[in-house]
Image (tube, rainbow, N blue to C red):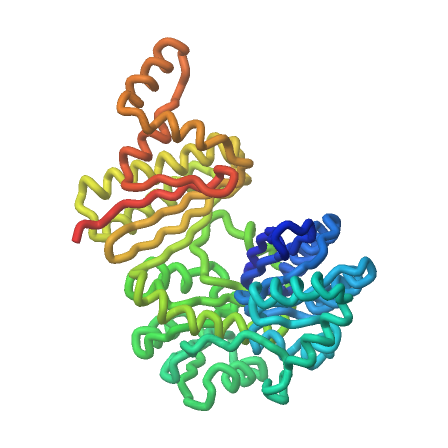
Length: 435
């Protein structure tokens, strides 16, 4: 499912003045699976009643009709309390939907946050109302294209290469596949349809596609995704999977190797188009920087933990690390998983561990995430910085009768970089590969 990342921050508008600009930074898709988070974030900002709200949409790839309705409603609520509401850095492809619905006639669009801050500073100085600000923005539209006479962000210059190939794995050709062909092939014919996994793998070796769209009915066990992702030569091909109605994808399998992204039926066709085209732009960039990426998920059950360990060991062995460095990294991985299951997931067999393995030419990065609430990792990390860290840990074990206490120190000793993220339920292990 396309994700949505949200961050809220505040900025001053004029130095020495109390009026604040609340900025909601969004990245990803505002769609059926994510609009609720978008709405809640705007509601949290609204409770603060700032002078102005700016939704920074530079990295928003898509917004559906529900998301647009949230924008309209939030603008109306802000106007009723005489607060300003602006959209910032909107991509032209995203702005088009809003323009066609008439949103651009009621909500000011500005190019970037500095432009927003300047506009609001002028509004403060001149005592302008939100409606007067909108009118001022409208007067600066001259010179824009007739289709969208608003200051929107230009699309990225690096577009999908004309030779990009798309492979579609579905039960049979139908109207849906015809629409996809017309949208994604762009008339160059570099679009291929297959109906079974073996045929898809064979065609991959022939055409080396940038994107594969997979219908879950053809690959219900994830066989195709697994074979693609564990093969270093194929793993960077983007896979978007389409699941059946109301499927709980995240928890439907005890062990799975993940595709790059997915949609659950029903979904909006434009959502699939934007997701596919985003992946087609991303893949060439990743192939310049990354050699392999495998994300896998498993329940905290002994047999599945062992299966995941075998996968991780095989990936590390093929990475280019020498035997001792590979052994050390695997030991750190095992410790991270064991800690996550024991402390984060509390040993619950129904909770999941999520692992992301990324191989670059000069390093390996493995992130291990549990479903726990995290912990005060900074305190425990600080214990490992001392030269006598092991002696101090040993003393605590002997004198206080503690069990454990060496896990973070072991991971630090076995890696070149150790980092915790979020509340502490994600640990990142990094090991350099000698040149």
